[in-house]
Length: 277
Image 1 (tube, one colour):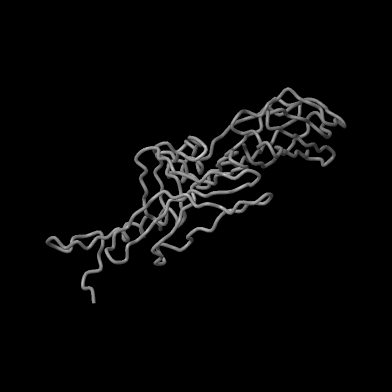
Image 2 (cartoon, rainbow, N blue to C red; image 1 turned 60 degrees about the vertical axis):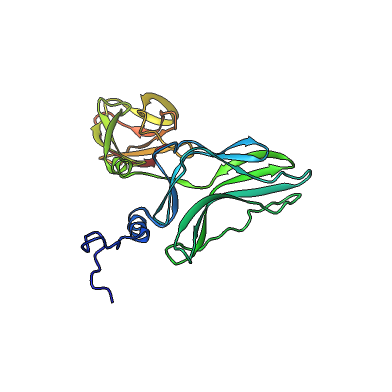
């Protein structure tokens, strides 16, 4: 039975007690057990078709189940030619392998050929075992190569980028902006945390607006606080008497549209929430 369980500490002398699996477990605990592109070298690059039979994988830094993979330079991976009248989906993977006899661990880039089909090609099977769970072979899919006949029609990147801690911290840091409230001399405060924007204000109206319907106003939501392309910013206001209420709609371009009724001198509470682009 082991008498010293400490990994990150000396056991004395030249005892080689630290193994790759120890670092991998720590990395997996911090980064997750999935496979990711690290946001370091060439992380914005995508796999490309060099020609009809070779796909170039960028010089990425990757991690899978805590094990770091370093692709030193752009690397070509060979795929078999397509067939006329047939479609096919090939996968290119980073294949982890453990030689159970020698204990040597390796990663290679491999092309896995899909089954040709005239209409509905499917991804080929891959090795899905968990390295942490003891699998001696495990594949990390990097990209899908779509073929129609002998032509490569597209390449889909399948591995996501791991966001570093500095980006995560930025996503949790509140950012404040303002947008002027129509028919008022005051501003609506906008607070963004990550992609979530909240709007709030308590103001007095300086002019009446009655039964407006999708009326464009001159105010614009500032960049960085505008809603995503598939949503709208909605801010609702109600005065202290309950007689006046309205909605402000913001578009992805920042344009604001007013609906509802408001009266001079009334106090209005405003609130809203939406997803930014």
